Image 1 (cartoon, rainbow, N blue to C red):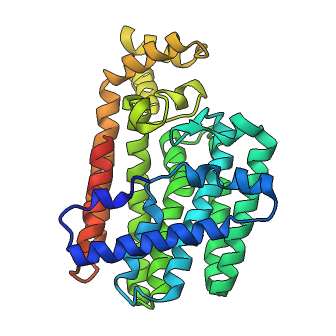
Image 2: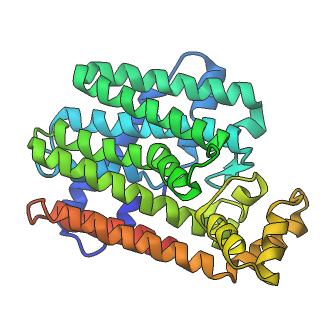
Length: 335
């Protein structure tokens, strides 16, 4: 597992050692949470868990907890709850997007079919809900609200903007619900589980909303600039499935406002058949050279600056320094 801790260099060694220990404890807890006597379900439920991941959301839980008593047992439970919910959503997302790979391995639906993948995601959501219940009613309510946002975000992405809707506002609302909601609850639950103040919990929630948008816009760039051998994701996956991204929205707006031959060519390819690998690769190359990609990257950097500004309300401590480094490092590496 390539931990997100790699993105927080220069942090106090003792602090990093504690985070490492707690991430390892979370990993053990995750394995226990997906354990089931049914041999087939245990195999499907562990598929993405075994594939690894940066564990960004559990790390945010742990960093938020550093502003209270980070050694409380509820903290590891909260970190596990958030990552379980994230893993469950990935099973569903990959079906909706027809994504062939995830984290460098075949997606669950590619191996077992859509029905098994969806039901595995449901199973993980059920396990996450059970864990939230052990933490208390407030945790369950916050988790249920996040689950609702995940569903709404996916639904709104699938249906698309209604007539008269601004496509950019619609897209950002989708990102807010599909991605930012999990980072927001990660920060909020981490603070609450550690007994930190309500002010810290609210700051972490606001930070997560902003950082989540930044991370997803960085992913939009990564979808075009990625090297499958290192990212585990084929470049142009979103293009092939017709999923709107910020670069494609910017290109379409430019085409509507001031069309030129090159932009018209890109839009025509976006609306064409991209089932052929060569056709997809040609479009990816065109977009990589288009200013819309760097414009999206700059949007992500601007959101990072706003997220870091929100963190200024927190006490000056190793946890705040690590959050700033994490936010900057992950986005810069991807854009």
